Length: 135
Image (tube, rainbow, N blue to C red):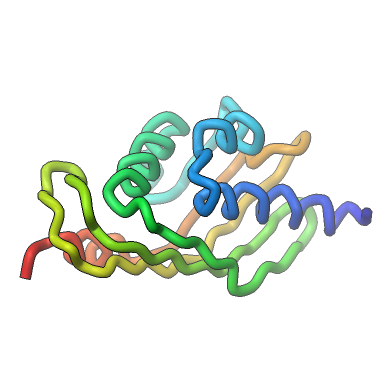
């Protein structure tokens, strides 16, 4: 396996873990303990990221993550992804709405020693959170 294929496999396995609903194992396997996360203005540490995404999976248990495209440049993997599910449980105080929830993003992950060391996702989180509101 080429170094580029290995990097792509690490990122792919991480993102596909959302479909297996095994985020805690995946974070242990693929996310560095000293992760630098630039998402949401750098306000999410590793634990907060796991908590937020775990709450999202709990609120939308039928969530499906799809990788649309991936590119490797040096030790960085760029992943264009979408995820979608149905809001059937409380999410940060918002009661189940039955709404379809969808988020599309582009993530750039820097991989060092087989783990994601640096992470940045660009997505419309305001629009994402609005989808949880009852209509």
